[in-house]
Length: 268
Image (cartoon, one colour):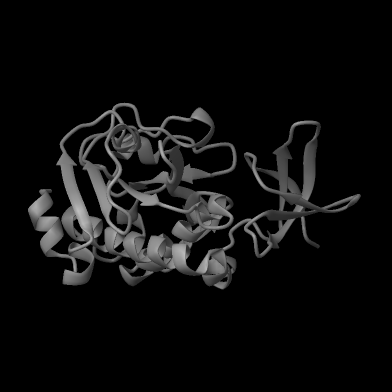
């Protein structure tokens, strides 16, 4: 991959909004790199792509493993002069946009596990990490990172998945024809640029229906540790603000953050 080649694959409108795009053979973390860089001007974006990450991060301090040229590690940063309402729901909006982009590339069974995982056939295909840095003088820099398994070594495909996922999957297993990494990067980047712009203008409401159509947890038994207790019940979708709804013995619970694992409970 190289920056010039990826930029040439973008439509002119999107290309003109990219302040800088850098491609690294290896990087600690694309998110960490952009968090250390200056924010782009409002309305423009900085992008970092790595063919391999040595210190990739997921939510709640988890590691994201990415052997060389086995996946796509892409982050972009932007600056909001005034933060959009319900900024945490941006992660869900990005998930809906990425799922739509992957479907255009032939991954028909892509689904989303609240709040940030990309799922195919019960396995984890990728994840999203959104981080915020307040700026001196006002405004916020937002960094959105995407880790996507593209063509994993066989040993990783056979490795056990996370507690909720039956296995680790890659894009090669999901499509009839695997796009090249530059084509994949350009397609994902185009969808991210459009999603951030739409979210800033219209909020999560613009992505709500699309996210519901991809909801992998709905109808499954779930367990989510919270500050004072562990919430157990059946996932019943999300609300318009992006919170997970769980039907429990004591009624519907609204979960705004947490790590979800599956249980044996399910809708009859």
